[in-house]
Amino acid sequence: MGLFDKIFGRQPKPSGQDNGYFQTLNAYTPVFRNYAGSIYEAALIRAAVDARARHISKLKFEMIGSAKPELKTKLTKAPNEWMTWGQFLYRLSTILDMQTTAFIVPVFDEYRYVTGYYPVLPSSTSVQDYGGTAWLRYRFSNGQEAAVELSRCGVMTRFQYDDDFFGSGNEALSDTMDLIALQGQAIKEAAKNSNSYRLMARLNNFTNAEDLAKERKRFNRQNFQDEDGGGLLLFPNQYTDIKQLTITPYTVDEAQAKEIRTNVYDYFGVNEDVLQNKAYGDAWQGFYEGAIEPFAIQFSDVMTKAVFSLNERGYGNQIMLTANRLQYMSTKEKLNIASQMTDRGVFSINEAREIFNLAPVDGGDVRTIRGEYKNANDVNNDDGGTDENND
Image (cartoon, rainbow, N blue to C red; front, side, top):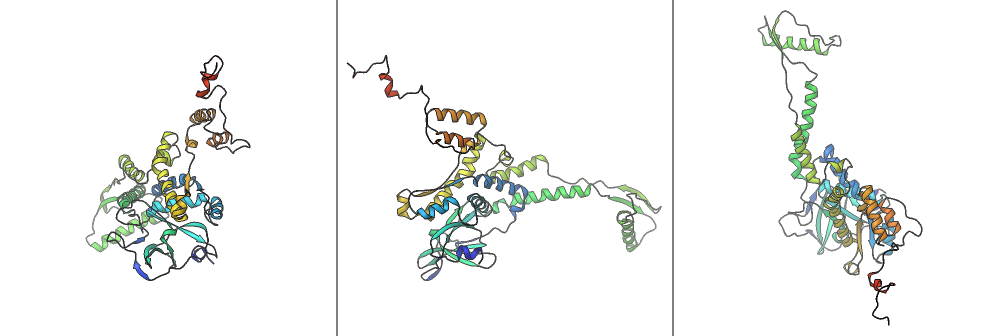
């Protein structure tokens, strides 16, 4: 039994008449296919995607509410039996960036109870209508297929515009990918040209084109291919007007290279400080709010809808991804906010320790207040004060 059978083997089969594709509001057939471009193979693209995924993988999964206590116990530990939450979120973020659509499917046990969730990467996905209910039919590159009710799955999207269910793909990045490829080729060609000779000469007493071609091959073989050549070029007296041709290879200048990098950074919502782990404080706060928090909110909404019924959601049951953003402040900023918030009873001791990535301590969940702080309503009752209720 493989992973496919573990995930989909216990899934309920579609019931009702197969009515074909689920009807959408636009003219598009509700089918999603993986982008065939290899943008993940470009180092700059991979670095940008990895930067987002690494920080997203540090988000903390929380299941709030009293519904589904057994599932809550399992999901609190791990999303499924094969992955940690860090691995789950990292791969989900990567798939979303690469495909602009990411699918999360439930994992069932032999009794068809949900035991976890898994981020799948099908080669294509379609929305099918079975008896008036929308199902997602997944097709994988190995030829296997499976169908799951749309209401049980999580579908996360980026750049969703012309499709009612799926993202629009990364074709908008094609021009930038072409520039990245040309830049790499230009650097390679420049390296090759710097280690090669290009000569031009007049060859006397040769009037036959075939003889000229044979002489060119002989010269190249003798001077550039023989191990005994030694890098010394010797010309017979038939050669005159010998000149070395200087070829200046084209390479992308710094301004053009910066523009390419900026296009990638803008597309994925990152910058050099994030990629090089230099961002903290306000800079990291901006990155979090622009690139991490939207993912966390969408995941929370999607998973809450997939896990809980409408009635359960009405009683406050929900899924959340949270992060302690204070850990990305400078040490000075951490000390200031920890002391201020702890002195005022806003943070407990353990909450303050968490800012410095320290483990909690026994009895550290209490909140303390500095002795000189008093309730404003009690000030008039101090010695020397007035109280209209006193005689």
